[in-house]
Image (cartoon, rainbow over all chains, first blue to last red; front, side, top):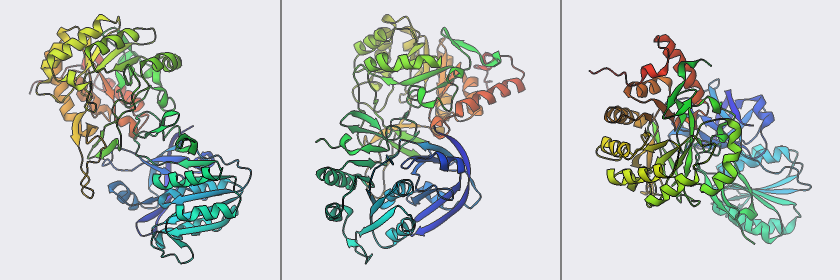
Amino acid sequence: MSKIFESKIKSNVEVAPTIFKLTVDAPELATLAKAGQFLQLKLPSDKFTLRRPFGIASTKDGVNIFYRVVGEGTKFLSTLEVGTTLNLLAPLGNGFNVDAASKVLLVGGGMGIAPLLSVAEKIREVEILIGGKNRDEVIFWLKEFIHLPSVHSIFVTTDDGSYRYGRKGFTTDYLPEILSAEKYSAVYTCGPDVMMYGVALEAIANGLPCEMCFERRMACGLGACLSCSVDTVNGRKKVCKDGPVFDAREFIEP
Amino acid sequence: MSKILETEICGIKMKTPILTASGTCGFGEEFENFVELDKLGGVMVKCLTLKPRSGNKGVRIAETPAGMLNSIGLENPGVEKFLSEILPRLKKYNMNIIVNISGSTVEDYGELAKLLDVDGIAALELNISCPNVKDGGIIFGTSPKAAAEVTAAAKKNTTKPVIVKLSPNVTDITEIAFAVEYAGADCVSLINTLMGMQINIETWKPTLGNVTGGLSGGAVKPVAIRMVYQVAKAVKIPVIGMGGIRTCADAVEFFLAGASAVAIGTANFADPNVTMKIIDDLENYLQRRGLENIRELVGKVKEA
C-alpha cells in the first residue's frame, strides 16, 4: 500500500556528467518497496505543480534513485542539500517477479538501468547487459552492480564504443549472442521503448518469458489521471497502476 | 465532525462543501488510502461516454508555470462497464458520486442521462466544455443554444439533479450559464480548463501529442474566481466553483465570490490528501471568523 513519506536526503551526488544519485533516509519504504516499483517525488518548491516519478533503484543504505538533469525540476533537485526533507509518495506500481527459479538476464538502457539494480538486489542469480551513450554513462552503473553477489556477468555496450571492455553499438545488437551462449529463465528489461521492444522480440524468439518496465509522464501515480495509459493486447492499461512492469506478451502478439 | 461545513446543493446533502473535480480523482477509489471519501461533498468521477474511448495519442501532460496542460481526450471505459463493474464497487465508500458525462450529439446526453438514472448516483455533471476532443463536449459549451439543448435533453431523461460544467473558453460565460439555467439545469460548475499550448524549443514541436490541451492549476485561479463571481450574480441556481484551488485560502475566495461548494482538481496530483487538509483548515477559518455554517460565507464578497 502506498503512502506519503517525509524523508531526509542522505546524499545527492553527481555520478556522471548531469547524472545524479540521490539517497534518502526511508527505512520503512526500503522494506516495503518491491523490485521495479517507483516513487513520486514532490520537489520542495511552489514552482512545481506535479510530482516527479522515479524508479526505485536500490534499497541498500537508504532508498536510492538515479536521475538525469533534463529540465527545471531535475535541475532544482540536483541543488538540494543533505538533510533536506523530501515528500515521497511510494511505493507505487507492481514490480518485477523476483521468484525466478534460475538465472535471469537483465537488459537496461540509460536511466532505465535503475530499477534493474533493485532486481539484482532481490533475485538470486542474474546477468546484466548494460547499454549507455558512452564510457561515463556506464561506469557508475558497473560500480553499483559489480559487488552484488547475485551478479554473475556484466555485458556492456556503448553507442560510441568509448568503453573499451564493452561492445560498440546497442544492447539489441549484442543480445542474440548472449542469449545463445547461456541458458536463462527469463529476460527483464527497462529503457527506451524501442530498445525494450527489440529485447522482447529477441527473448520471445528464444522462447523466454520477458518483463518490460515502462517509463511514462504521469501526474498522480495512482491510476486516476490517465496520463500514462498504454494500449496492450488486453486493452488499455495504466503504466502507474497496472505496471510499470508488464509481461511482454501484453505488447507483442504471437 | 461538526455541522459547520454541512451544506445542501440542489438536493444533494454534503458533509462538507469540498468535492474532487472530474478527471483528477478517477472514480474516487484510487484515493482511498489518502482521502476519507465520505467526508467529501462529492466525487465528480472521470468523464463517461456511451462507448469506451482510448483518448489522445502521444504525450498527454506537461507542467507549466503554476499549472499543467492535459490532453487526455476523455479516455474512459464507457457507461456500460461503469454501471456493471465500477459503480457496484464504489457503493462501499458511501460517497456522493457525481457522474460527469460527455456526448457527440444532443441525443447522446439524453441517452447517458437515462442509463445513469440509477441508485447510487447523486447527480450528473454535463461536460460541455472539454477542450481536448473534436467530436463533443466543447462544441456544446460555446453556444448558448446548444448548451441549452443538451441540458434539456439530460433533464428530460433523469430524476437526478443536473449540473452543467461550463467552459471558460467563451467571450461571455454568463450567457451560457443563463441559457442552461433557463433550460432547467439545477446547478452550474465552473471552470473547466482553459485551452493552452506549449512548444519544445529544441524539437520545435508542440509538447502535447494533441497539440493543444487544457490548462489547470494555480495559474487559472484568478480567471476562475472572476467567472464564478460573474455567474453567481447572473443566475439563481447554485454554483460549484473550481480552478486552481490548492489551499483553504483559495477555497474561501471561491465561496466569497459566490460558490456554494468547491471542487479540488490538479492539486490532488501533488497532494493526494489535500482535500482533507482543506476541510480541516476551512473549519478553523469559519470558527475564527465567528461563522456557524459555510453557507454564511457564500457570495459575501463586498463591493469595492
